[in-house]
Length: 197
Image 1 (spheres, rainbow, N blue to C red):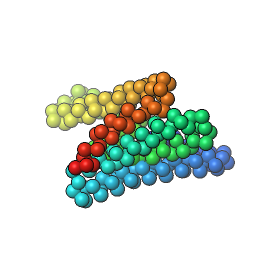
Image 2 (spheres, rainbow, N blue to C red):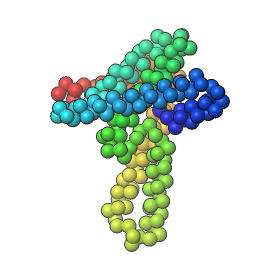
Image 3 (cartoon, rainbow, N blue to C red):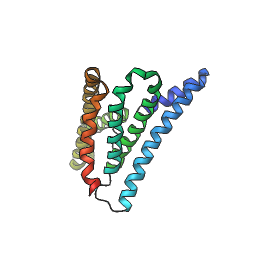
Image 4 (spheres, rainbow, N blue to C red):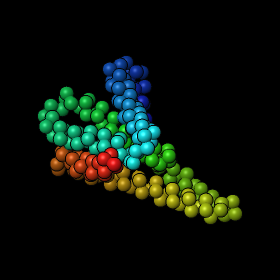
């Protein structure tokens, strides 16, 4: 999900003459964009047809892809040399899909795969609170409540991203790819009712 890093590596690889690695980066970037585009298309399509759960279709696609990743990943682990590029592309697609879902739901206020942006927003919120503490007359109480709410949300997202990373690493260490199957099942469970409606 780290598109900043991928674009930086593409530039570095082009400068070093590693054009195949740069092409791999371009492919990952395009697949991430394709996931985000599919998510936006499905949300807009559901909205145009006045469907009950407009975010359920991309969530279901993500759940199915995560289930495929979990179930097939365990069986292909022995042939990782061939399947690593496919796995990277699948994960990039899912991250683009997931990031677009949350971006659409939050009206572009939250991007769950971008911790840099969240940490920046935490810094901005803290700066606003410090300024309000220094000059309280310039900041109405409603504004400060909104800043505190957003700050709390962003801190929670960073902490949950970290906890999810730890749990994901532990799950992979002890169970392997199958650790993603319960998550896929939960996403399917959440999305199946609105899709059926």
